[in-house]
Image (tube, rainbow, N blue to C red):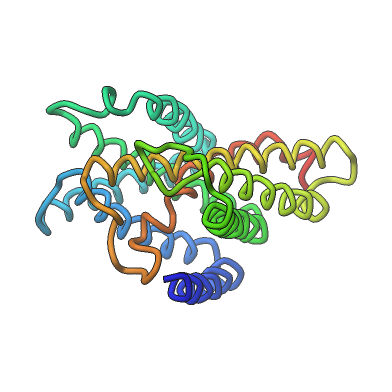
Length: 273
């Protein structure tokens, strides 16, 4: 499994680098939207929507909301869908502590279906905005997520003793989280040297934003774990050998991208080069 996971991860990394650095933002947005639609199909299935027509309808709603988010950007309100995403994830993260009561009952699937739209669409428009601002910052976010995920996986496997969220994701440990944060700090310091303005305040703020982004990515991962736990599924799909489905690969970015983009909006102009 480790070899399969590594091979798939390397293949995805090469594809991601090519897509990020060699496609224009509009084509990057279309590729991203295709991934979101794959993810929406998996989310719909986990949230109880069965059948091609029903899932197609869910995908159509996703595309419509993505179009609305794009329109808001063109109208100069790019902060709006990004902020909606961040606010939603703050609430979603808070709900994880009592998920057995908050995400239960006869309306659970309906609420999870709505949750998918709040998770997927703001994340998509956020990565599009990051790419439009600087493709290298988009690549930085991908490297941050991939390296942190790998550090958490291997550190947790080697040193993991204390479970982070046993009722949501028994495989995640505090030791794995510490490994992810340590790796994230290294990547953040390198990123500060490359992207932050040439002053200590800018470096500190960029590193702080990066670390907050890592924390957000953990909640994105845990929320998808909750979704799978409610659905009684180990993975969101089987499209990616060793990684599961598309959602299993992008879950952390669903929360991380809006947080990172909102932070960039505040740092733009005086702290980011």
